[in-house]
Length: 349
Image 1 (tube, rainbow, N blue to C red):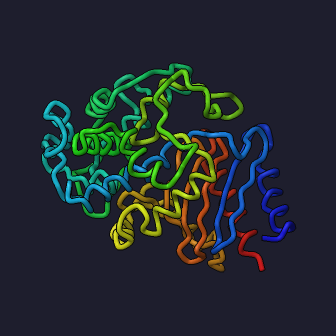
Image 2 (cartoon, rainbow, N blue to C red):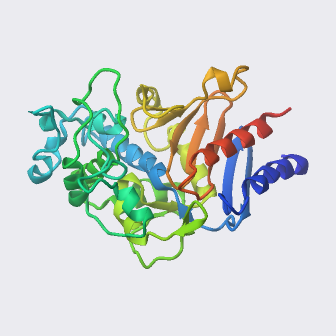
């Protein structure tokens, strides 16, 4: 990559950091055999950050590994792996109990209909997200997350045609399935199955609220210091990493290094969640609508993003892998705009 090209990529990051919405950004990308990484503001290349829901890709990869080893099937009922106390009253929709119909695939694809324990409003009229933003940092267990979810109405029956509802509860349950199937913690599974094999030396599951290694998140122009919550997300959003590690991970995910490459086709069954995003089976599709991309110059991407402003995506059309963060929870669109700008720059002839 020419120094001029590297300079133009770094200039994009510098422009994103305005010290009002974004105080630091870190990105890495790989196009064919060329790799670049850059940072701006208060993030350095070696500074770990919270990847939030991008963690869900780790969970997806582990589930697919367990399937490959014959430990589970995506069409297994989750009641086979989840304690009866958690299953009881898990999905009651319009007076009918669908709990025993839920499958592993429903959870991965967000087609379970389960509400989101994190962003949906609970009995208090506030969401857990609202509570955290207002300064009420707190711990919760998987059991507590699911109890919270049980007090919110499901959106539809499991597998209802053409329907998806993004729910962190799905991935809390998947974390439990991983633990109950392997007899090891989610953290151990991440270490043994992904982090160590790929040599991700700065990647780990956040488990200690006194750990100040990751950069503190921002909400608008305020620091959002929620270490208790960050230890509680686990399989739906608890991993800490750096952009270079995430670039290695996203390439491994989509090139058959973690699970059979043939599985990727099966993951690409799309349902609308929040435009311009679609939910697949454990992954997301980011594709700009024609009105914003009339020439089709901006390719579609598959991967995942997180509310922290982190993302990791792959463009099959351009053989481009990209990972990074803007470390801002109030404006998740900024990380996508940054990804698009970097992509347009790298594709310039």
